Amino acid sequence: MSFWQITLELLGGFGLTCLLFLLTLILAIPLGLGISFCTMSSFKPLKAVSKIFVWLIRGIPLMLLIFMIYYLPGLLGLGSLNIFNQLDRYFTSLAGSSEMLYHGRFIAVLIAFVINYSCYFSEIFRGGIESISRGQYEAGQVLGMTKGQIFRKIVLKQVIKCILPPMSNEIITLVKDTALANAIAIPEIIQRAELMASGQAIIWPIFYTAVFYLLFVGGLTILLGRAEKKLSYFKA
Amino acid sequence: MFLEVKNLTKSFGETQVLQGINFGLEKGQVLSIIGSSGSGKTTLLRCINALETADGGEIYVDGNKIFDAAEQKNKKSKTKNILNFGFVFQSFNLFPQYTALENITLAPSLKIREAYKQKSITKDEMKEKLAEIENNALSLLAKVGLSEKKNSYPCQLSGGQQQRVSIARALALSPDVLCFDEPTSALDPEITGEVLKIIKSLAAENMTMIIVTHEMAFARDVSDKIIFMDGGVISAEGSPAELFAQRENRRLQAFLSSFYDMAK
Image (cartoon, rainbow over all chains, first blue to last red; front, side, top):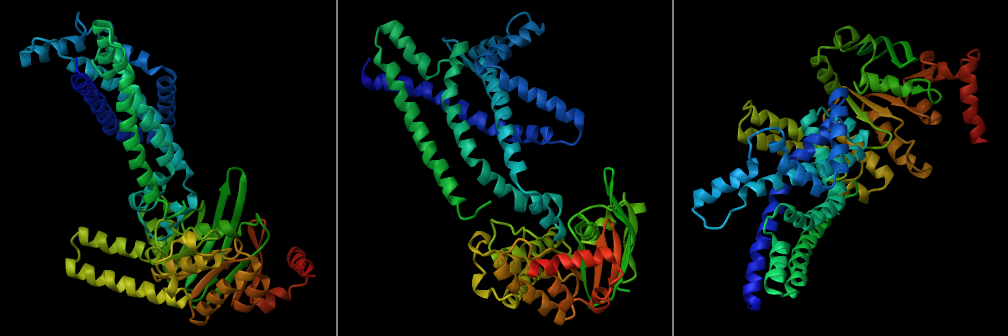
């Protein structure tokens, strides 16, 4: 295999990484916001349940969570075959592909990622929202603003400024965590490099994968740094 | 009476912070509330402004009942309450992401935009009113002597300047009664004067005001009426001359002498 063939093959795997990354972000941010509101709720049962949920998810290794999501429907007796594998077969026959597709397994991984990251995000959001002083809410209140207006017009931007650094950290971790999709045989970039190592005895592509991650994280760092700079005009 | 507070009570857990407060204020008068920390003066001001919900009592403005603890479930009374009063905080509470000018225009322009969304005004009317709000805000900034700071963010302003912007922000909604909660307590002594000067000029324009303060000399100068609170009740009240002459009220004398001691 030439350098370009290997690059293209790895790039295909990295596409999966990017897709998993993007979908997780898009889904976990709103879900995390919802969970953070639950953990701050004055309705005690909801608060307790959501706090226990966050503790469970944050306490379970992401790789284990992926296995759990993957095997759980089968264990609960939902079909004798693994539901995600059945989806794989369904999509494979739908596309008439000769190779087994991995859409079903990808969904399992995505579910695990979204649950895991929404819990981490929810704690960051909670910290950010709770860091806003009561005076800001009260100032809005005495000016006759509604609760929604106070959140959207006053609190939100201050929260975003406050959570940007810890969110950047989590987002960068997410990029690298996508490699865990490997655990249920999704052909992401590292798995493809491993296959080259075992099948064709070429080791260097494994090291080469780091370049993809580094470039992607580098781009993200610049982007997030710009966002931080954009919000640096005020002090929260 | 323009403002009447009747039998206001408030407890936090076991502690009764307000034990039945009654007072009245005429339009254009300035009332100062003095008293040591924990005497309930800030809580009283917060109850009047609906930042706390009183457990009992009633509040009237211009003969209209704006608060009745007995009907507290009725949320309308709460919003009505807000529109009658302006509030200036001890710690300013300016919105950090907005300029001085935007801090002043934010709330009034949101109201206009809301009215437009609900189709009670046309787009042209909205634009006209937004321009009006901005002009009004600019003249308020001029009034507090900060015209040249209109595009500054709160973090670029000194404490005294921030407090002056927050006074302008409260005035932008043209409240019936403007309330101050220890407006100079978070300021360096040498800049309290610039804030007190603004409050004095408002008094000269017959703005109805309630001021919770530790500035005794200022309270004496600016007030038509002073209330001395002690342990959740009004221990003494009257014009500055009357109040400072009440030799027989030991708590008041002890409180006042602590200030003279400090001055020595």
